[in-house]
Length: 436
Image (cartoon, helix red, strand yellow):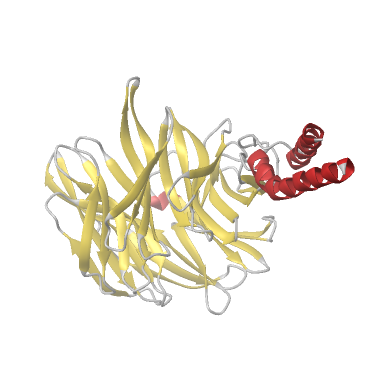
């Protein structure tokens, strides 16, 4: 009888342990959560200033990158001091070939229907479009002249193979005052202008990002003047012909805010990334600011990311798991450090990775190429061969444990799962002894 009672107690404890051990295991191991692991990092360029602005995956073949090469490093703001840079890599990011095209600035690249490439960019004050073959050899190019006062800051491919171009039309009000009117134009596949639209609100607006929406219209993001030298985040929705449907602004009086990136989300709403002024006891700095809206532009939530330095979001995308991926940079007295943040669907931070190199490093765009796998493209002075090199990084989100040599240390130590199992066995042994 005694043996039977002990057996029953042991069996009950064992059953309880079987039920509770997964919960215990999760409590022991889930604290660290997912982390980013670098698969590889590559730089491209020579002695001049090179920077990547856009990257596209070529399934099974690698990647195509476009960007700019500054051929006059003392005149970094002049468009005519740039050459377009086009780079083809293998799937591991190793360069296979590169080409340059004089006097232009490459902003976006896409794969043409025949397998060649389409590059979109600027030539002096004009929009520029070029078609190449599979080896980057030019087949044709188009230049569309635009008013000299127009500042072009955003270009995207449209679903019909054309382009949407957005920015602002700078108006001189007096010797000491200018105002920007938001202006954008649709361009067909041949580089011809189909239509243009302008928003001439008295406070002035500027578009810094444009995105074609699921209904065939467009959403633009940037900033809007609100008086007293103040600017707010602006989001504007238009139909397929550029007619405004609604607009919203976000911000606090006397605190400059703006958006650098916008994308539509799977629920039909929008996610914006940019900056806002944060007032602190030790002084004021800009923090990265993220805003989620519904399909009508009404705010659902916002999040601030940043520390004691100036932080900005340069690129935003919704991830395949419903969360969000943000890329940006920190400005420490002119020294730029690149970073990337992954959040859940409500904007709660899941992980953050920074590249605190000894020199300037910046991410211009982030793109999810497969589930939990991301490409980062920008420019690096820390990992360069020349002045500043075009930079491409591939990272994977994983629950595995590692330490990335040029990123943040991962807190989830190797072998933690085994440790959790050992602790569970010890607890079971103690429970059996106590019950017996």
